[in-house]
Length: 306
Image (cartoon, rainbow, N blue to C red; front, side):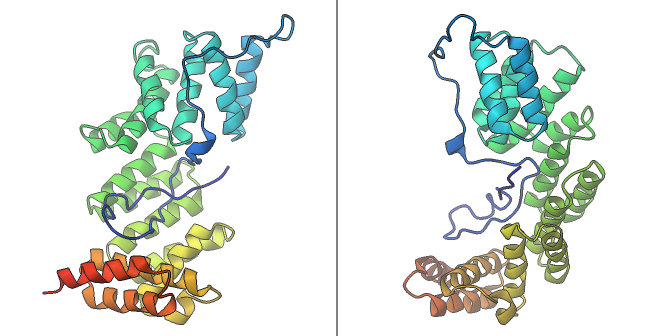
């Protein structure tokens, strides 16, 4: 299962010239270029005798989903749904796959349609409620994110996606203590330790608690050393602490410049203007040709100075 970084600082970084965001979703997201939405045509009709019975296809879809092969699961669920759009279990599986692939709008369309057919308090209804809340949070259209996620959690206490979603919401509101407590609940529910500990580190980083954030990122990196996101977050903190040799160790000049730019912008968001200027000038010194981002951020920084 591939883990992609998402979305954690999206609100914070709107309008900024940076490529930061290093938070990781509890639900792995996959590039939208690999996802296929339903279109208004029927699939090619197979020759008689080659049709796969819906029950067999459904078993294959469920097996693929459980194994983390979401591409195969999506293909199978979609085929069943195209053949019979009244098949609620297949449509629910399709919705869950769309959400994993980052197609929240498509997923929400399916979840909304399933609200009227999934019954109340059944396992399917609980999945619909959880997926719908996450899709609405992703699209930024929830009337009250906290209320919707908590309502879904009442029936899905072991759904790690909801716990991490709630933690990210608390982070966006600056409610760090509640975010940390929520990430702990996610861990207890069985969330990926490296991903969740990384998110705890992001929460501490946003509050300026660099030493504690570094500790979390080191833990995450030790648990999953092949996941570059965790190492990058660790380096961001080192740069913010002024430990420049360690921050850029074994990095190319271009990557080092990008790291300094991202760290500089994070310092800007915390109104730490002196540190931000130092980091952005380091980015320009390393890569003056390729660091238009740092130059633009320095111009923005000059407008923030008293």
